[in-house]
Length: 410
Image 1 (cartoon, rainbow, N blue to C red):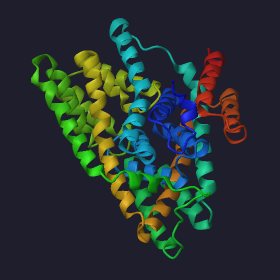
Image 2: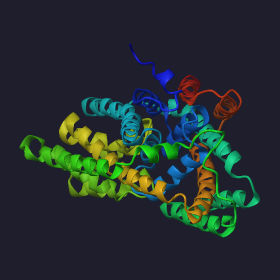
Image 3: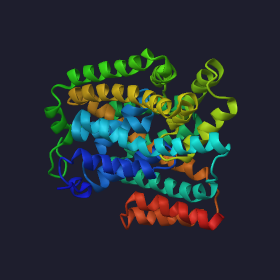
Image 4: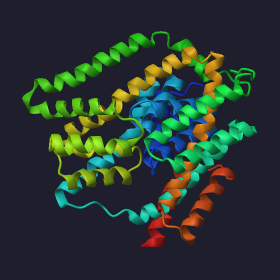
């Protein structure tokens, strides 16, 4: 008898097949950068499926922002771990990257065969205002539950101000540190946050009970990762694929602050040191990463394809995403163990407020990157109405908005 993924996802412990199907859909529709992908994940897991609480999602976002690696994929791995442990993390992270991986493969083949990138500007004229609406709706929903007082609102507003005035990677660190210190300063006398919400058991407790053997599992995963790096190098025919895996894996653990911060390091290594692609090909690879759903660092797939075909594309993709996800899971595991600390609770409460401000500012930056006219404003307003009033799923809003943009701007 076949398993219906949509039925399984409604259970308190969704099946791995259900999680795979859900995150495959998310990975197919999450255009607009890492915050857009995070917003879609939040919409599914917190608002619609009630598999995580707002606090858990904000904790995952906060942790991902201060650890190396692609923020969105790390948040997905964190979410999968919270729901179904190690296997859930692996399934969710894999599913969310598959759509963009295969799309980049197709675009890479087209690029090296015909020397052109498919025109998608009209689609993006419709995508961007809808993405801005999705991110803003996420910030509003999180803020409704977490920004309950004057201090909380001030922390979120300060985060927006820092991002607007300072900008860049260091602004993210400033916001996290500032918000955490504010939480310690203003919330340390409050009553500890309850571990039960809306009469349901806390998903963190379920995972903590289930994952007693996490360290042993992680050792096995690290051994497997080492083998994955070493084995391809044994054969001379697959030496380049192994080198791709090792190169992208080593770079990925130096990635702090999101994909755009990583571009200069990748350019120096890929273009200037190894000469795997030309400067123009590198620019085109980054462009392809931006026109696909999911994380911008899927550009690694293009580079891997150029160097060693489909196998090279797979190795480069694994290298850029897997090591940071493992670091994320290790830190998540130890975060679970120390979250009973009252000090950590008040610090995290402050950080959550700062993260909400960062999400709200991300909506503004996405909106400003699109052309402002009657059509885009109408798409933004319609998307906000569909999300907040009609409670429609995001998977319908983004494709419809892209189709409107294609028809309206052609």
